[in-house]
Image 1: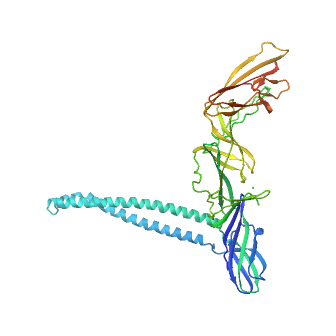
Image 2: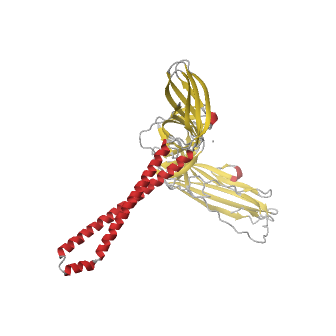
Image 3: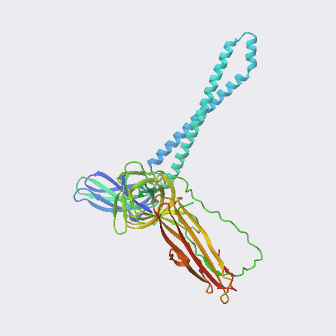
Length: 515
């Protein structure tokens, strides 16, 4: 007996899915062989599991997975697509014939109007009076307008039908690729001592399905961060998921908003360049660009229906409360996992050596039961789209920093205040002194904390000595000469950071890297 269990549940992983099919049949007493045909080749045959529930004494004798070849692709969806393609093609042929007839009629009308000498002769021999002549002209004009309107309408209808035919043909090709004539079948043998209904459940793992997280992060007027956690689900498994219970799992049965980072500033001995016989041609590599200016789709405006969260030591699952339909053509379906608010700590970061700007930054603790998988986040400042950033894995109670774009109401200026070379030589060594001042001005109506990042060079040659002579306020010194200050700044106030450093080296040593 052939049965066709429908897909009832799907658990989607980042790199695959687990599909559950179920069917109930009424069986008489005895031994029965049940066949489930039309299963896609992308399933993992070793993962197929069958469970059966029936009357008392029912036994599941055997389960066998087989590969079978069909002369025609056994799928109702493909046959339906073929019917729609044929109907659309017939409509195009009918429209083409109608347009040809309209063109013939228009050509005939133009030929009549061009035969003006015949009308003139008819008027001359009193075979046609002026009133009749003008009445015929009005009739010809009206008919010409009707023909033009009919041809324009036919052109519009033809474009619509061609787009529809292209869409149906593309869907047919995509679906046919995932539904080859060679497919899996599962043969189940059961034994029932008495007549009873039998519920058969089939589960298997399948490839070419995935989900990726997407986040909408919106900083509200009260400085809370609204997090909308979305899942982008797609599949090319070869089977349509229609009104299935969907669960997302983290298991694996696999000018942007980045704050600029200072590069190391080395000093070293200048070495002579080797002379080349011929210069090799240079190629300029084109920089890749990102459409960061495009505004993404708005977040959900309807009432929130959140996913049910289940977690253990290593895996988190999100069971969606409503059924989902997803075709096997790779169409992405956006589903909501959760929406909640967090309270971030807001600060600013500036690297004035590279850019005279202050970047807003949110230090965030994930006080939610949701594990944030690595993914793309759309950032908003209230209703203003700022851009996109990439999030790393963030478990519950984990911390992260989010860039929130430029804060133009903080003015930054960095200027050179000292640059001198000691005229007196200490032995055979030369000493250079350099100083900078960074001015910060807060034009906001609220206080702000600004992290200032700068640097001094570091030596990679043993005879070069670099020393931080002074810094006000005191700087936090980090590796490779990086300096850091944390400056609280009251509303509409100014502050400054000053530092000086010296570089000593032998007079005979020519160094590179100094500004």
